[in-house]
Structures are given as structure tokens and as C-alpha cells.
Image (cartoon, rainbow, N blue to C red):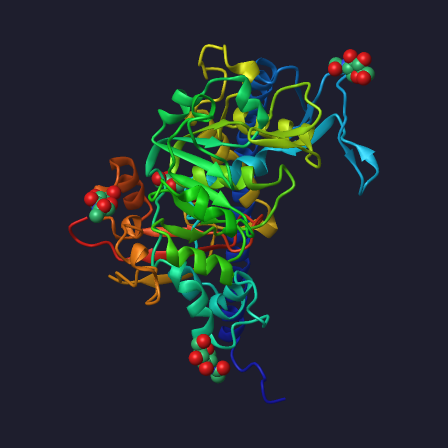
Length: 470
Ligand SMILES: *[C@@H]1O[C@H](CO)[C@@H](O)[C@H](O)[C@H]1NC(C)=O
Ligand SMILES: *[C@@H]1O[C@H](CO)[C@@H](O)[C@H](O)[C@H]1NC(C)=O
Ligand SMILES: *[C@@H]1O[C@H](CO)[C@@H](O)[C@H](O)[C@H]1NC(C)=O
Ligand SMILES: *[C@@H]1O[C@H](CO)[C@@H](O)[C@H](O)[C@H]1NC(C)=O
């Protein structure tokens, strides 16, 4: 044997090496053990925090829900129930059932999702396409109708389609506005005169072809700042936007040739919405308007969403009733959102209430619940990750002191070229509200974008070089 032990000293060395090794293993193991005990303890505190939060959500629903009640299952799950005897009149042909009277929610997930929106960019930009893996090749192709191919094999062709609505960087910022009114199209608006109240907001966001004129002014107001539209509305848009050259048009789904022709002829700022996925809670343009609002506004008031008990069909303030919405599901989800501090609901049956939001959990309480929900989620083995504000960033990109190009193309009409359509894109940082500037600094100049709808931890994060004077 070659490796014969020649010296008793070697044995001694070996023995001590083994001892040291086991000691190290023991120390590592026991520190791991205390660590996991510590995690256990924090988990218990977090569960306690969330349990208390559930109770405050329950009170809020009882006070504000017009008959809805919340039933707590555990620290995250909750069922919202309509009172017995509620008439469920909307028939779901696909599942052959009337709408249920109970809706189960995961409050922890909801709070993580909606708090995230407050820091998000919801407008498609060039930097996003540059940073997202296959952003141009695959994702851009999905946002262009009539491309004729499933991918952007010809990059300059795709750019041609998009550049008229593609800013280099986010034109709007988190907390840019203090108060925003999101106005849905419900026929309920005609039962009240919220016009002046709506107009008193810093920003008003409307949907699709909603008319704003003398006839409806006392019900829906006159102010026009944003309009979220679906594909196919292009033909009506020219007429609707007339008289409001500053109203920002945000296209919800895809752009296409007709839309581009329309855009090139009008003076309005136009962008594409970023983050198009429908989620379970509630559907439609209304939900997207809330997402858009939350990504720019501190307080979001909603009007015209048909959220009172007793109605049986979907109505619009400017046209005949339509069928095909799910009123109970919508009403339950909006009530949950109000009690999570995401929105404030205004409706005919709430119109005579004193405006008092003291039964909605405060920002401070919500932030605490958010922290607890995040820590619990991250302590699950499959979800490990950083608890900081960038813990959900999956893909990173950097943009230097990069100031262009602004959206537009060489074949735009004189009307557009001479207009102020790019004013939000070129607005100097120092013109932003103080809260928005503070936020930008706290976020270290990073913009967050969703990659794919529902997921919470696959954000695309783009870091901007902060200029020394900002
Ligand atoms: C439900 O519908 C029935 C029959 O149409 C009606 O008699 C009852 O009053 C309705 N209940 C409520 C709470 O609206
Ligand atoms: C790519 O698109 C551009 C712009 O439409 C066009 O001029 C060019 O011919 C296309 N290239 C190929 C290889 O098809
Ligand atoms: C363009 O918009 C900005 C910001 O609202 C404003 O300060 C500027 O005066 C506008 N310019 C014109 C020509 O309307
Ligand atoms: C949102 O931004 C604030 C800074 O304004 C930061 O403190 C917070 O952690 C962020 N929250 C989320 C969920 O990203």
C-alpha cells in the first residue's frame, strides 16, 4: 500500500481535522436551527398582524358594503357573502349557472398585487422593449394587429408600426397626481349629480366612447385628462376627442393600421397600455383604468361602476342597456378593493353619506399588512428572495442619460406636428410634484414594469442614471 501511515503524528492531525470539521458542521447546523426558529417567530408575528388586518377589513365591509359581509377563514383568506335573498339574475351561459352569492379571496395576494401597482409603470416604452428578453422579437409583435407574422422578424417594420406611440421612457410617474377620478360608463351616473365633484380631481380618467358634453355635464363632469380605449374604437375617436386636444389616449390592447392613421391626424398624446392580462377578480376596461390610475395617483375615486345592490342588467349612461356582465362578482371585488385602501367607491346609494373613510384601514396599517404578507410569502422555500423594493425584479436593464427619441414619425399630419402631443414625455423632472420626485429618488431612478400580468415577482426593472442636479 502506498498511502501507508508512516507517522503517528499524521493520525493525530487526521483526528483533529475530523473534530474541527464536525464542530463546524455542528455550528452551521445549530445556527441554521436558530435561524429557522427566528423565521418561525417572525412568521407568527406576521400571521398575527394579518389576522388583525382581516378583522379591520371585515369591519370595513360591514360598514360600507351595503349588505355584503366578510367571513374570515384564516390570516389570508376571506369570503365575501351577499345577504340571503339576493337575486342573482345574471346567467352565465358558459357554465350554465347564475352568479354565486359568495366570493373567496386571498387578501395577502391582493394586497401584494395592488400595492405593487402604486410603483409601476403602465405605459409601454422603448426601454421596456429593449430590456425585456425578446421584447422586440416576441412581445412587440403581440401588440401589433395585422402584422402578418407572429414575430418581429423585420425589426424596422415593427418599429414603423409602434414608433408613433412609443416614448423612450415613462411619460407618467408614480404619485404624479394627488387625486384621480376614474369614471365608468354605468347608467347609475344619471341618478346622481357628481359632475362638479368629479371635476374637482387633479385628473379624470374615462373609458372608450364615453361622451363628455353639456347634456351630461352635471352627471359626469367636463374635465378630460385620460381615456382608456379598446381596439376597434378608432373610427369613433376622432369625433370624440374633438375639442379636447390634451386628453391622453391610452390604447388597452393592440395597435393596428387604422389606429395609426387616426393617431397621426390628431393632436392628442397617445400611448399603449402595458400589462394586459385579465385577472379573475373583475374584468373589463374598468379594472384597467384603476390599474392605470393607481400607477400615477395617490387617491383613486371611482364613479359610474354599478356597485349598488338591486340592479339586474348592465346599463350605460349614454346608450341602451346591454347584457353580459357579472354584476355580483364585480361588486364584491370592488368592495374588497375599497377595504384594502385601493379605491374609494362613489355611487347613488353612497351619495348622501358623509365622506368619511375612517373605517377603511389607514395607509400605515396597509403598509404593515403588506410587509407581513411579503415576508410570509418570501419565507416559503420556493419563493425565497429579497424583501427590499427590488425583490420582485427578475430582469434588469440600465439606461444612461438617454433622452430620446420621443414618440412620433415623419409622416404625421401638420396638426400633430404642431401640437403639444409630447408634453408629458418632455416634461422636466423638476416639474413633477414633490411626492413623485421623492418617490423617484427612493426608487433610485428605477422604473418597474410587469412582464406577464398576474405574477408578482417577474418584473422588468430599468435603472435610469440620476442626473446630478436632480
Ligand atoms: C327577488 O326576486 C323576486 C321575484 O322576482 C322578488 O319577489 C323579490 O322581491 C326579489 N328580492 C329582492 C331582494 O330584490
Ligand atoms: C422590413 O421593413 C421595412 C419597413 O417597412 C421595409 O422597407 C423592408 O423592405 C423590410 N425588409 C425585409 C427584408 O422585408
Ligand atoms: C405644452 O404643454 C406644456 C405642459 O402642459 C405647457 O407648459 C406648454 O405651454 C404647452 N405648449 C403649447 C404650445 O401649448
Ligand atoms: C414602493 O415604493 C416605495 C418608495 O416610494 C417603497 O418604499 C416601497 O417599498 C415600494 N413598494 C413596493 C411594493 O414595491
